[in-house]
Amino acid sequence: MTMMIITVFLTAIVVVLAILVKTSQTGSGIFAPPEISGSRDVFPSAKVVNLTGASGPESIGFDPAGEGPYVGVSDGRVLKWRGESLGWSDFAYTASNRQECVRPFAPELEHVCGRPLGLRFDKKTGDLYIADAYFGLLVVGPAGGLAKPLEDVIYFTDTSARFQRRQFLAAVLNVDKTGRFIKYDRSSKKATVLLQGLAFANGVALSKDRSFVLVVETTTCKILRLWLSGPNAETHEVFAELPGFPDNIRRNSNGEFWVALHSKKGLFAKLSLSQTWFRDLVLRLPISPQRLHSLFTGGRPHATAIKLSESGKVLEVLEDKEGKRLRFISEVEEKDGKLWIGSVLMPFLGVYDL
Image (tube, rainbow, N blue to C red; front, side, top):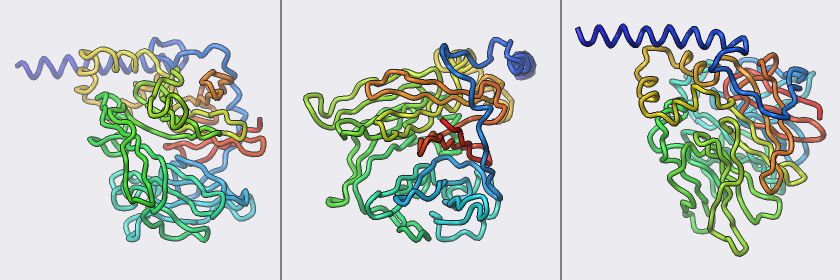
């Protein structure tokens, strides 16, 4: 009898939340994504570059010759864009055995096929460094092919010791704080944990003068700054507090930083992360991960990118408030007067002319 009452209660909660999310999709519901003062709703005019047979271009990179972009996709490959006439081609992959890796989006096979998330080129050698969610830090030469384990110095984040990449929403909802910021040194072949106890560590950017490094903490909606040199060396502080959940950070040629928000932080997300009783209720709801994601992101797909100064000041906020063209973005790379915009979920890149 008790279980029946609990089931009926949870079902009623699901119905109520579904109604609230439905109203949020029109922009009027209490769970709708919040407005950001001073933002410009310009991304609906962005162009898209579709991926054929691939999905989730999480991270973006350009090689030393300016060719690309290169993107890591859901099936473990790194693709290279060769222009309108040639389209996308395979450049690299992170798993040697790819017999099962034939579907564009198969989260249950990520541990087999790999999931390249972070991409960075060495501007001198042309080597591409890849942070794979399952195979760790890898490197591949300018000709591409199978990426090999890293033998270099690099900073990177480890999101969680408890949850796999495909369980990212569960990691956030459980306020998991097992994330780390790590430095790997080739000469000593030693990995050093520089920061630990992070709530979904999710991206790194080095300052132009190399005096500090920024670390994304998604769950808290913060960017942390760790000083590498100067009087504050080895100390860290909050660099910026954001109106949503950051997913990767990239520095532009001026030393400013572009941050992609997976979504803005609405009422549902605020309650889930601040009220234990509400979070416990949410985690018990008999709904699909897709519906839970919709609730958490405000019921209306959208895209938000924020440019920060070297001191952490918000310089610009660009959006697609209704998700007409872009949604759930994961990275913003500025190059030659354009913003190249990735997404961990969508099957295309966005391109916006500044």
